[in-house]
Image 1 (cartoon, rainbow, N blue to C red):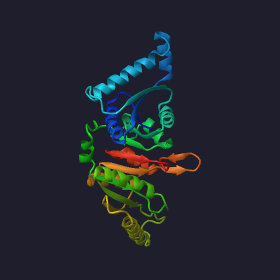
Image 2: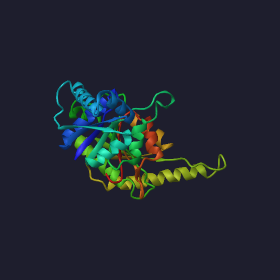
Image 3: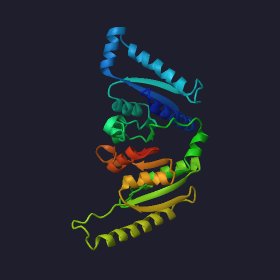
Image 4: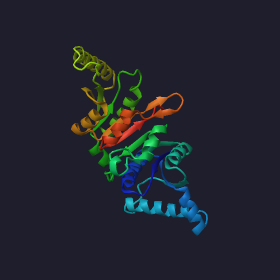
Length: 295
């Protein structure tokens, strides 16, 4: 068992590394650092400097990256360095499976230009296929130095749920509760009621239907919360609007530094990232833990 942290030598991946090291230390697991070489670059390096030269360089760079990140101080966990060649997302998923990773920690580093608010393409593809929980760290964050830094930062955990899908939220809520117990953080359980889009604008029944749906959602969410243990404290909240935008807004307004979300499931293909999850990951500025059904 291990915690897997893909490294591309960027500053965002340095922040992810700090989170991964603390997670590995707490879990008593090893920390596997993975970098993925481009096949064409590997061929060019082999012709210029001999076979395996690029792998050797990558390992040295990873060791230097770790020393620079922790100012020469080891993070208190056993670090394994892995170098692969191929498509980054495929190699991340393969390594996670081979090493029985309990968690993948990676940055939400996005592209530039018009897509700068969108999720990084590698992170997106990993989330669409993973069967392992993925902690997505903010690209602009340097990461914590100690576990106490995390406890001070994460005082509230936001858990978006869809109460209209039977059995879709129990596992996600339980995962968030376990984290809340560890960190001493409260849980904010949120269901977003999407507006009814009437075919005829201003239809007389639209407002009544929306109010009724909200009332029913509040009753069902409250009943669910009442069945949970007293600790950590869980607060139910039902809001009205577009799910991703409301989740991001609530995370900011209520200072929820961690969002825990479930990934959609497919009987054939396994975990898949839904459109709401994708948009939340694209617009939120905090930590997001994505839990596949198998987590």
